Length: 381
Ligand code: ADP
Ligand code: MG
Image 1: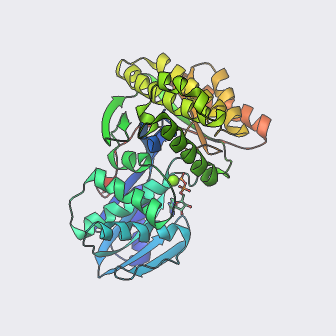
Image 2: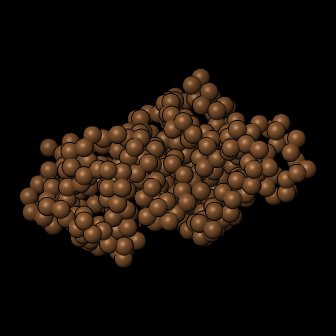
Protein backbone atom coordinates (compact mmCIF):
# COMPACT_ATOMS: atom_id res chain seq x y z
CA UNK A 1 0.00 0.00 0.00
CA UNK A 2 1.25 3.48 -0.73
CA UNK A 3 1.05 6.14 2.01
CA UNK A 4 -2.26 7.55 0.72
CA UNK A 5 -3.90 4.13 0.62
CA UNK A 6 -2.64 3.51 4.13
CA UNK A 7 -4.26 6.62 5.63
CA UNK A 8 -7.49 5.93 3.72
CA UNK A 9 -7.52 2.40 5.12
CA UNK A 10 -6.72 3.60 8.63
CA UNK A 11 -9.49 6.20 8.36
CA UNK A 12 -11.97 3.46 7.46
CA UNK A 13 -10.80 1.37 10.41
CA UNK A 14 -11.16 4.21 12.93
CA UNK A 15 -14.09 6.25 11.65
CA UNK A 16 -15.97 4.11 9.13
CA UNK A 17 -16.42 5.28 5.57
CA UNK A 18 -14.14 7.36 3.37
CA UNK A 19 -12.39 10.61 4.24
CA UNK A 20 -13.69 13.84 2.69
CA UNK A 21 -10.12 15.13 2.29
CA UNK A 22 -6.56 13.85 2.25
CA UNK A 23 -3.82 16.38 2.84
CA UNK A 24 -0.06 16.10 2.89
CA UNK A 25 2.93 18.23 3.84
CA UNK A 26 6.55 17.23 3.14
CA UNK A 27 9.74 17.17 5.19
CA UNK A 28 12.83 18.86 3.82
CA UNK A 29 16.58 18.85 3.46
CA UNK A 30 18.58 22.03 3.32
CA UNK A 31 21.23 21.85 0.59
CA UNK A 32 23.19 24.78 2.02
CA UNK A 33 22.64 27.88 4.15
CA UNK A 34 22.62 26.54 7.71
CA UNK A 35 21.95 28.66 10.80
CA UNK A 36 21.35 31.61 8.49
CA UNK A 37 17.55 31.82 8.71
CA UNK A 38 17.44 33.50 12.13
CA UNK A 39 20.08 35.94 10.88
CA UNK A 40 17.69 37.16 8.16
CA UNK A 41 19.93 35.43 5.61
CA UNK A 42 19.72 32.92 2.77
CA UNK A 43 19.16 29.18 2.66
CA UNK A 44 18.54 26.66 -0.10
CA UNK A 45 16.19 23.90 1.05
CA UNK A 46 14.15 21.43 -0.95
CA UNK A 47 10.94 19.68 0.09
CA UNK A 48 11.38 15.89 -0.13
CA UNK A 49 9.28 12.93 -1.16
CA UNK A 50 8.63 12.03 2.47
CA UNK A 51 5.65 13.61 4.15
CA UNK A 52 2.92 13.64 6.78
CA UNK A 53 -0.55 12.70 5.55
CA UNK A 54 -3.93 13.29 7.19
CA UNK A 55 -7.17 11.68 6.00
CA UNK A 56 -10.12 13.53 7.49
CA UNK A 57 -13.74 14.63 7.37
CA UNK A 58 -15.51 17.63 8.93
CA UNK A 59 -17.38 17.47 12.23
CA UNK A 60 -18.74 19.89 14.88
CA UNK A 61 -16.43 22.25 16.79
CA UNK A 62 -14.23 19.37 17.94
CA UNK A 63 -11.00 17.93 16.56
CA UNK A 64 -10.35 14.23 16.97
CA UNK A 65 -7.04 12.85 15.67
CA UNK A 66 -5.52 9.39 15.65
CA UNK A 67 -1.71 9.63 15.43
CA UNK A 68 -0.80 6.26 13.95
CA UNK A 69 2.96 6.68 14.40
CA UNK A 70 2.48 7.39 18.10
CA UNK A 71 -0.29 4.85 18.64
CA UNK A 72 -2.14 7.63 20.42
CA UNK A 73 -5.27 9.75 20.01
CA UNK A 74 -6.40 13.23 20.98
CA UNK A 75 -9.81 14.94 21.08
CA UNK A 76 -10.32 18.60 21.96
CA UNK A 77 -12.82 21.42 21.55
CA UNK A 78 -11.77 24.38 19.44
CA UNK A 79 -13.13 26.80 22.07
CA UNK A 80 -11.02 25.36 24.91
CA UNK A 81 -7.61 24.24 23.64
CA UNK A 82 -5.88 21.98 26.16
CA UNK A 83 -2.26 22.65 27.10
CA UNK A 84 -1.60 19.35 28.84
CA UNK A 85 -1.51 16.96 25.88
CA UNK A 86 1.22 14.58 24.73
CA UNK A 87 4.10 16.34 22.95
CA UNK A 88 2.83 15.50 19.46
CA UNK A 89 -0.63 16.81 20.35
CA UNK A 90 0.79 20.23 21.18
CA UNK A 91 1.66 20.67 17.51
CA UNK A 92 -1.99 20.03 16.63
CA UNK A 93 -3.50 22.27 19.32
CA UNK A 94 -0.79 24.85 18.61
CA UNK A 95 -1.74 25.18 14.96
CA UNK A 96 -5.39 25.60 15.97
CA UNK A 97 -4.33 28.27 18.47
CA UNK A 98 -2.14 30.15 15.97
CA UNK A 99 -4.84 30.10 13.28
CA UNK A 100 -7.42 31.47 15.71
CA UNK A 101 -4.94 34.11 16.97
CA UNK A 102 -4.61 35.24 13.36
CA UNK A 103 -8.35 35.61 12.92
CA UNK A 104 -9.26 32.37 11.16
CA UNK A 105 -12.63 30.83 12.03
CA UNK A 106 -12.13 27.09 12.34
CA UNK A 107 -14.38 24.09 11.85
CA UNK A 108 -13.69 20.77 13.54
CA UNK A 109 -12.61 17.52 11.93
CA UNK A 110 -11.80 13.92 12.67
CA UNK A 111 -9.03 12.05 11.00
CA UNK A 112 -5.95 9.86 11.04
CA UNK A 113 -2.41 11.13 10.75
CA UNK A 114 0.81 9.37 9.85
CA UNK A 115 4.10 10.24 8.22
CA UNK A 116 7.32 8.82 6.83
CA UNK A 117 9.63 11.73 7.60
CA UNK A 118 12.05 10.36 10.21
CA UNK A 119 11.03 11.97 13.50
CA UNK A 120 13.61 14.08 15.30
CA UNK A 121 16.34 13.52 12.69
CA UNK A 122 16.57 17.05 11.35
CA UNK A 123 14.36 16.51 8.27
CA UNK A 124 11.63 18.61 9.83
CA UNK A 125 8.90 16.17 10.68
CA UNK A 126 7.59 18.95 12.93
CA UNK A 127 7.01 21.43 10.09
CA UNK A 128 5.45 18.62 8.03
CA UNK A 129 3.04 17.97 10.89
CA UNK A 130 2.22 21.67 11.38
CA UNK A 131 1.57 22.30 7.69
CA UNK A 132 -0.49 19.13 7.30
CA UNK A 133 -2.67 20.19 10.25
CA UNK A 134 -3.00 23.71 8.83
CA UNK A 135 -3.98 22.24 5.45
CA UNK A 136 -6.57 20.05 7.17
CA UNK A 137 -8.11 23.09 8.89
CA UNK A 138 -8.14 25.01 5.58
CA UNK A 139 -9.95 22.11 3.88
CA UNK A 140 -12.75 21.78 6.43
CA UNK A 141 -13.04 25.48 7.33
CA UNK A 142 -13.08 26.64 3.72
CA UNK A 143 -10.46 29.40 3.96
CA UNK A 144 -8.06 30.08 1.08
CA UNK A 145 -4.65 28.44 1.32
CA UNK A 146 -1.97 31.11 1.61
CA UNK A 147 1.27 29.11 1.74
CA UNK A 148 3.45 31.88 3.15
CA UNK A 149 0.96 32.79 5.90
CA UNK A 150 0.54 29.15 6.78
CA UNK A 151 4.31 28.82 7.14
CA UNK A 152 4.20 31.70 9.61
CA UNK A 153 1.35 29.95 11.47
CA UNK A 154 3.62 26.91 11.80
CA UNK A 155 6.49 29.02 13.09
CA UNK A 156 4.21 30.78 15.61
CA UNK A 157 3.10 27.34 16.80
CA UNK A 158 6.72 26.46 17.62
CA UNK A 159 7.75 29.87 18.96
CA UNK A 160 4.70 30.86 20.97
CA UNK A 161 2.81 27.67 21.80
CA UNK A 162 5.71 25.23 22.20
CA UNK A 163 8.25 27.83 23.36
CA UNK A 164 10.89 26.75 20.82
CA UNK A 165 13.08 29.39 19.22
CA UNK A 166 13.03 28.26 15.60
CA UNK A 167 13.42 30.06 12.28
CA UNK A 168 11.04 30.13 9.32
CA UNK A 169 12.94 27.91 6.86
CA UNK A 170 11.32 24.56 7.67
CA UNK A 171 7.75 25.76 7.44
CA UNK A 172 8.33 27.91 4.38
CA UNK A 173 9.79 25.05 2.36
CA UNK A 174 7.20 22.51 3.54
CA UNK A 175 4.49 24.95 2.44
CA UNK A 176 6.08 26.03 -0.85
CA UNK A 177 8.21 23.17 -2.21
CA UNK A 178 8.46 22.82 -6.00
CA UNK A 179 8.95 19.36 -7.56
CA UNK A 180 12.41 18.93 -9.07
CA UNK A 181 13.72 22.10 -7.43
CA UNK A 182 15.33 23.53 -4.35
CA UNK A 183 14.28 27.06 -3.39
CA UNK A 184 16.65 29.92 -2.72
CA UNK A 185 15.01 31.50 0.28
CA UNK A 186 15.56 35.04 1.46
CA UNK A 187 14.57 34.75 5.11
CA UNK A 188 14.04 38.52 5.50
CA UNK A 189 11.88 39.15 2.45
CA UNK A 190 10.40 35.63 2.72
CA UNK A 191 10.89 35.42 -1.04
CA UNK A 192 11.58 32.15 -2.84
CA UNK A 193 13.23 31.38 -6.18
CA UNK A 194 13.17 27.82 -7.53
CA UNK A 195 16.49 26.42 -8.80
CA UNK A 196 16.70 22.97 -10.42
CA UNK A 197 18.78 20.15 -9.02
CA UNK A 198 21.79 19.71 -11.35
CA UNK A 199 21.02 17.13 -14.06
CA UNK A 200 22.39 13.64 -13.41
CA UNK A 201 22.77 14.13 -9.66
CA UNK A 202 20.89 12.84 -6.63
CA UNK A 203 20.68 13.99 -3.03
CA UNK A 204 21.40 11.14 -0.64
CA UNK A 205 20.21 11.57 2.94
CA UNK A 206 22.44 9.91 5.53
CA UNK A 207 20.78 9.58 8.93
CA UNK A 208 23.46 9.09 11.60
CA UNK A 209 20.83 7.61 13.93
CA UNK A 210 22.16 9.71 16.75
CA UNK A 211 19.80 12.00 18.67
CA UNK A 212 20.33 15.74 18.53
CA UNK A 213 21.00 15.90 22.25
CA UNK A 214 22.32 19.41 22.81
CA UNK A 215 20.35 20.99 20.08
CA UNK A 216 17.95 23.25 22.01
CA UNK A 217 20.40 24.82 24.45
CA UNK A 218 23.19 25.14 21.87
CA UNK A 219 20.76 26.61 19.34
CA UNK A 220 19.66 29.34 21.75
CA UNK A 221 23.30 30.04 22.62
CA UNK A 222 24.26 30.39 18.92
CA UNK A 223 21.35 32.74 18.36
CA UNK A 224 22.48 34.91 21.25
CA UNK A 225 26.06 34.94 19.90
CA UNK A 226 24.80 36.06 16.49
CA UNK A 227 22.73 38.84 18.06
CA UNK A 228 25.80 39.96 20.00
CA UNK A 229 27.90 40.02 16.80
CA UNK A 230 25.26 42.03 14.93
CA UNK A 231 25.12 44.51 17.82
CA UNK A 232 28.90 45.06 17.80
CA UNK A 233 28.91 45.34 14.00
CA UNK A 234 26.07 47.85 14.22
CA UNK A 235 23.79 46.03 11.79
CA UNK A 236 20.17 44.89 12.23
CA UNK A 237 21.17 41.28 11.51
CA UNK A 238 24.30 39.42 10.33
CA UNK A 239 22.68 39.30 6.92
CA UNK A 240 23.69 42.95 6.59
CA UNK A 241 27.41 42.44 7.26
CA UNK A 242 30.14 41.62 4.71
CA UNK A 243 33.37 39.70 5.35
CA UNK A 244 35.20 43.06 5.25
CA UNK A 245 32.87 44.50 7.94
CA UNK A 246 33.67 41.51 10.11
CA UNK A 247 37.44 41.88 9.68
CA UNK A 248 37.23 45.57 10.62
CA UNK A 249 35.39 44.67 13.83
CA UNK A 250 37.66 41.73 14.72
CA UNK A 251 39.38 43.37 17.69
CA UNK A 252 36.04 44.40 19.22
CA UNK A 253 34.62 40.86 19.05
CA UNK A 254 35.16 38.00 21.41
CA UNK A 255 37.02 35.20 19.55
CA UNK A 256 34.11 32.75 19.74
CA UNK A 257 31.56 35.35 18.63
CA UNK A 258 33.88 36.27 15.76
CA UNK A 259 33.93 32.69 14.51
CA UNK A 260 30.15 32.34 14.82
CA UNK A 261 29.70 35.51 12.77
CA UNK A 262 32.26 34.35 10.21
CA UNK A 263 30.25 31.19 9.66
CA UNK A 264 27.00 33.06 9.10
CA UNK A 265 28.50 35.74 6.86
CA UNK A 266 30.45 33.30 4.66
CA UNK A 267 27.52 30.85 4.63
CA UNK A 268 25.25 33.52 3.18
CA UNK A 269 27.79 34.07 0.39
CA UNK A 270 28.14 30.34 -0.25
CA UNK A 271 24.37 29.96 -0.45
CA UNK A 272 24.00 32.68 -3.07
CA UNK A 273 26.85 31.17 -5.06
CA UNK A 274 25.29 27.70 -4.75
CA UNK A 275 22.01 28.97 -6.22
CA UNK A 276 23.99 30.49 -9.09
CA UNK A 277 25.82 27.21 -9.64
CA UNK A 278 22.54 25.30 -9.69
CA UNK A 279 21.07 27.74 -12.17
CA UNK A 280 24.09 27.07 -14.40
CA UNK A 281 23.87 23.28 -13.91
CA UNK A 282 27.31 23.30 -12.25
CA UNK A 283 27.16 20.28 -9.95
CA UNK A 284 30.89 20.36 -9.13
CA UNK A 285 30.73 23.90 -7.79
CA UNK A 286 27.60 23.11 -5.76
CA UNK A 287 29.44 20.14 -4.23
CA UNK A 288 32.50 22.24 -3.35
CA UNK A 289 30.30 24.82 -1.63
CA UNK A 290 28.52 22.08 0.34
CA UNK A 291 31.90 20.81 1.56
CA UNK A 292 32.96 24.31 2.60
CA UNK A 293 29.64 24.76 4.42
CA UNK A 294 30.19 21.63 6.50
CA UNK A 295 33.75 22.63 7.36
CA UNK A 296 32.57 26.05 8.53
CA UNK A 297 29.79 24.48 10.64
CA UNK A 298 32.39 22.12 12.15
CA UNK A 299 35.20 24.60 12.81
CA UNK A 300 33.55 28.01 13.26
CA UNK A 301 29.99 27.29 14.32
CA UNK A 302 30.80 24.05 16.18
CA UNK A 303 27.47 22.33 15.63
CA UNK A 304 28.61 19.08 14.02
CA UNK A 305 29.23 15.91 16.00
CA UNK A 306 31.61 12.96 15.80
CA UNK A 307 29.01 10.88 13.94
CA UNK A 308 28.14 13.67 11.48
CA UNK A 309 31.83 14.25 10.71
CA UNK A 310 32.42 10.49 10.34
CA UNK A 311 29.52 10.18 7.89
CA UNK A 312 30.58 13.21 5.87
CA UNK A 313 34.21 12.08 5.69
CA UNK A 314 33.15 8.63 4.51
CA UNK A 315 30.84 10.16 1.87
CA UNK A 316 33.61 12.39 0.54
CA UNK A 317 35.91 9.40 -0.02
CA UNK A 318 33.47 7.71 -2.43
CA UNK A 319 33.56 7.93 -6.20
CA UNK A 320 30.78 10.09 -7.63
CA UNK A 321 30.38 12.17 -4.45
CA UNK A 322 30.49 15.86 -5.35
CA UNK A 323 30.03 17.19 -1.83
CA UNK A 324 28.70 16.29 1.61
CA UNK A 325 27.57 18.19 4.68
CA UNK A 326 25.39 18.03 7.76
CA UNK A 327 21.85 19.36 7.28
CA UNK A 328 19.50 20.89 9.84
CA UNK A 329 20.51 22.30 13.19
CA UNK A 330 23.29 19.74 13.82
CA UNK A 331 24.55 17.79 16.88
CA UNK A 332 23.37 14.55 15.28
CA UNK A 333 20.54 13.86 12.91
CA UNK A 334 21.20 13.80 9.18
CA UNK A 335 23.90 14.64 6.68
CA UNK A 336 23.41 14.84 2.91
CA UNK A 337 25.59 14.16 -0.11
CA UNK A 338 25.33 15.28 -3.71
CA UNK A 339 26.11 12.15 -5.75
CA UNK A 340 26.21 11.35 -9.46
CA UNK A 341 23.12 9.26 -10.29
CA UNK A 342 25.19 6.43 -11.75
CA UNK A 343 27.19 6.06 -8.52
CA UNK A 344 24.33 6.19 -6.02
CA UNK A 345 24.02 2.44 -5.32
CA UNK A 346 27.72 1.75 -4.52
CA UNK A 347 27.91 5.09 -2.71
CA UNK A 348 25.13 4.11 -0.32
CA UNK A 349 26.49 0.61 0.26
CA UNK A 350 30.03 1.81 0.95
CA UNK A 351 29.09 4.68 3.25
CA UNK A 352 26.71 2.47 5.23
CA UNK A 353 29.44 -0.15 5.68
CA UNK A 354 32.18 2.30 6.61
CA UNK A 355 29.96 4.22 9.03
CA UNK A 356 28.85 1.05 10.75
CA UNK A 357 32.43 -0.19 11.04
CA UNK A 358 33.67 2.97 12.70
CA UNK A 359 30.68 3.87 14.91
CA UNK A 360 28.92 0.51 15.48
CA UNK A 361 25.69 2.28 14.55
CA UNK A 362 23.48 1.28 11.61
CA UNK A 363 22.74 4.38 9.54
CA UNK A 364 19.74 4.92 7.28
CA UNK A 365 20.58 6.09 3.75
CA UNK A 366 18.04 7.00 1.09
CA UNK A 367 17.70 9.19 -1.98
CA UNK A 368 15.49 12.25 -1.43
CA UNK A 369 13.74 13.64 -4.52
CA UNK A 370 12.68 17.30 -4.57
CA UNK A 371 8.91 17.39 -4.08
CA UNK A 372 5.98 19.80 -4.06
CA UNK A 373 4.83 21.57 -0.90
CA UNK A 374 1.76 21.04 1.29
CA UNK A 375 -1.51 20.40 -0.48
CA UNK A 376 -4.63 18.36 -1.04
CA UNK A 377 -4.04 14.87 -2.40
CA UNK A 378 -6.33 13.16 -4.85
CA UNK A 379 -7.56 10.01 -3.13
CA UNK A 380 -6.20 6.79 -4.60
CA UNK A 381 -8.72 5.31 -7.04
P1 ADP B 1 12.34 17.22 13.40
O1 ADP B 1 13.77 17.47 13.06
O2 ADP B 1 11.90 15.89 12.87
O3 ADP B 1 11.45 18.34 13.01
P2 ADP B 1 11.50 18.01 16.02
O4 ADP B 1 12.00 17.66 17.38
O5 ADP B 1 11.47 19.43 15.63
O6 ADP B 1 12.31 17.11 14.99
O7 ADP B 1 9.99 17.51 15.90
C1 ADP B 1 9.64 16.17 16.20
C2 ADP B 1 8.32 16.13 16.96
O8 ADP B 1 7.23 16.44 16.06
C3 ADP B 1 7.99 14.74 17.49
O9 ADP B 1 8.58 14.52 18.76
C4 ADP B 1 6.46 14.78 17.57
O10 ADP B 1 6.03 15.44 18.74
C5 ADP B 1 6.10 15.63 16.36
N1 ADP B 1 5.84 14.79 15.18
C6 ADP B 1 6.52 14.79 14.01
N2 ADP B 1 6.02 13.90 13.13
C7 ADP B 1 4.98 13.30 13.75
C8 ADP B 1 4.05 12.27 13.37
N3 ADP B 1 4.13 11.67 12.19
N4 ADP B 1 3.10 11.93 14.28
C9 ADP B 1 3.03 12.54 15.48
N5 ADP B 1 3.89 13.49 15.89
C10 ADP B 1 4.86 13.87 15.05
MG1 MG C 1 11.57 20.37 13.76
